Amino acid sequence: MSGITTHVLDTARGRPAAGLAVVLESEEAGAWREIGRGVTDADGRVKSLLPSGTPLSAGAHRLTFATGPYFAAQHVTAFYPQVTIVFSVSEPTQHHHVPLLLSPFGYSTYRGS
Image 1 (cartoon, rainbow, N blue to C red):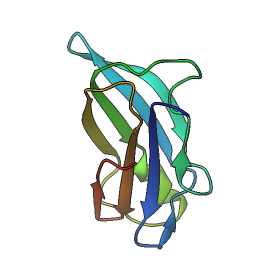
Image 2: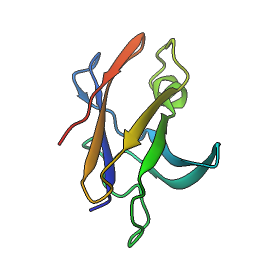
Image 3: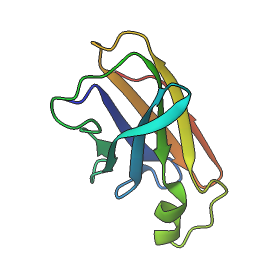
């Protein structure tokens, strides 16, 4: 399993958000570098954001969710064209699960398990 995973739930529809693009970046020397990407599956999950065999590093990481295209595909007007979550990894050997609870006009997140 990837050191970082995510799960997106569309709380307005009461179901997983399938087909939503996600980009994972790490901060290095003050700049962001893409280290992985994926698209949520039918269960709203991206289980392999990091390429196989790629270790997770300590430091700041950023997940960007393409919420605008996701809602547009459903013909839903949404306030946020993207959601960006910046978080810190202090123990890179641990699994980091970052869920996103999403609706057209709001979102929340937390560190999952």
